[in-house]
Length: 172
Image 1 (tube, one colour):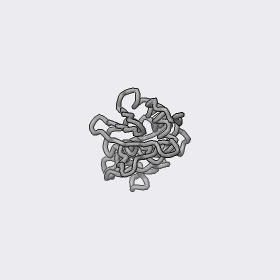
Image 2 (cartoon, one colour):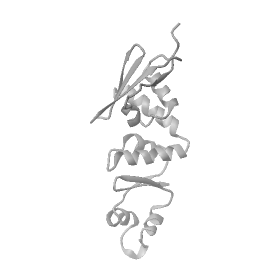
Image 3 (spheres, rainbow, N blue to C red):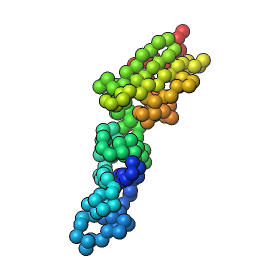
Image 4 (cartoon, rainbow, N blue to C red):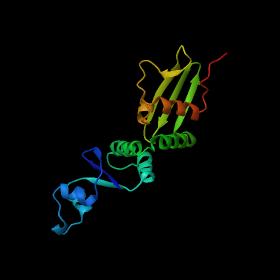
C-alpha cells in the first residue's frame, strides 16, 4: 500500500503505512486518536490510501479534491513506478476522446487540439514539419498537452493523434 499525502497544495507519495507515517509525525498509539485522524486533523495532511494500481489510475484520472493536480501527479508517479503508466494514460486519452473532452481541428498541416476539463479549455497546436512528422508549433503555449501530462511524451502525443483519427503518413 502506498499513500498520497497532500499538504499546502503539494503532494508526495509515501511508501509506509499510515501508522508508520503518523509515528514519524509524532503520533503514538496511546494518544487516543487513530493514526489517519492524527495526520489529517492534527498535522493538516489530506491522506489518500492507494492500495493498488487500479486505485492509482482512478486517482490520476478522476481526482477532483484538494490540490487536484498535485495529487493526480503523485498518482501518475505511482503508475509510472509500477509499470502501468502507458496503458493507464492510453485509457485516459481514449476516454477523453470518446467523451468529447478532447476536440481537434485539422487545417492543412496544422492540428489544433483543445482539451476541456469541464471548467477551462486548453489549446495546443501541432504542425507537420519538413519530415511530415507532427511537432508543437513554434511559440505555442502547448497548454492542452501540458494539462494532459503528455507535453514531453512523444509516444503519448502520437497515441493522441491516432486516437483522434488524424493520419500521420506522408502524402504521395
